[in-house]
Amino acid sequence: MVVVRPFKAIRPEPNLADKVAELPYDVVESAEARSLAQGNPYSYFHIDKAEIDLPQSISPYDEAVYQKAAANLAAFLQQDWLKKDTQDNYYLYQLTMNGNSQTGLVACTSIDDYMQENIKKHEYTRHEKEVDRMNHIRSCDANTSPIFLSYRKNTGIQQLIKDWQDTHEAIYDFTSYYDVEHKVWLLDDPKVIEQLENAFASLDALYIADGHHRTESAVKVGLEKREEQTNSVESDYFLSILFPEEELVIKEYNRVLNVEIPEDFFSQLQESFIVEETSEKRPTSPAEIIMYLSGKWYQLRVKDNKIPSDPVDKLDVSLLQNLLIAPIFDIQDVRSDPRIDFVGGIYGPQKLEELVDSHNWTVAFSMYPTKMRDLLQVADAKEIMPPKSTWFEPKLLSGLFLHDLETK
Image 1 (cartoon, one colour):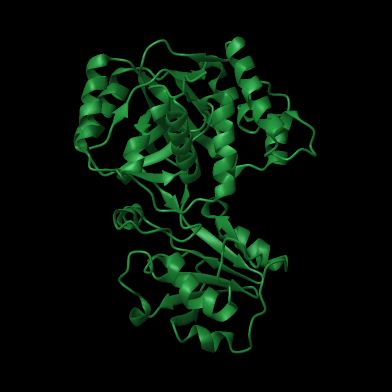
Image 2 (image 1 turned 90 degrees about the horizontal axis):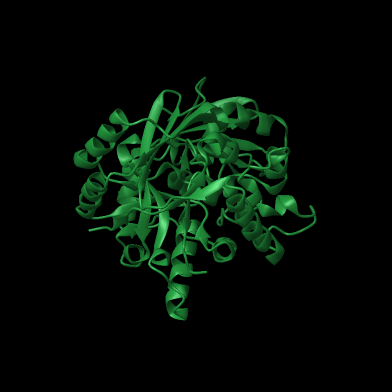
């Protein structure tokens, strides 16, 4: 059983939604955010990456940045660029990219469900990233970015959502980054709200698709407020958008290495892989990796006896790491080793060619994308996926929904 509840969203006026909404804070560097927000006073980067309104020399983790974020949020509210709804609602958020649509329920989920592992994770988090978002939440007294959650197929939930979309007009409808269409519906009927609450209560679990640091930070701030006895009903919950797993698309997360290629490299590869030159630049099935080296593409097919049954070790990113990157190049910690970097699948194999041909990187690996069934299996097994295993597209925009913790 999981708790999913409506809330009073802080959100943009309809005529400003496309001007406010921005990419998530963690996929945009400060300099890029400053450039994107230039000339746009409504940009949510003024709140989510408030360092853009301070001297460029300032650290994005300076206390002044969090104070500026809170001040900017207060200014947005004062000028009615953002407004808080007066009753508890759900919201539906649909993203359409390349003809594929996914619709999520915007709601609040429980910190207790997370603590009790009813909201399941598949990644480790880094302390410094948690501290950043905790400071942001404390300063703004709000969940300022949504958590991207998923749930297993449930026809009852999907029918309720579809019926509402079919019979109501969207309150937001605009196209933004990468030609993604964003549509939002206000779901304010108490009867339908209750039906959805009950339907979600029948689920065994929710799953974090993306946003582990945001989740951990929101939960820790909520628990902190409980301990300090400054909590409210709202601070016991955090902002989430819940999508059915069958609608989600995970793109590949490719790798590039800057390493010395040993003379017997291909002989070493043949211990674990069947190696052939290819004209293909993307794998078409699991246990297949496409490598770009010295202007040529190679298919690396993992030998059957090298594929384990463990849900983590059998992932393609694990096979590459355990059979090639670690044993041949001695790159053990992919989080910190400067000889490896990661390229989201949205940039395509041409980006891998560009990086290697520039001679800044030696070899690139085009990966088969992790599937949602793999992610759910790993989370159910209470295991952790390797870093940079999933790249979700399209990205949920920030600034369309904030959740007031109501503790100030």
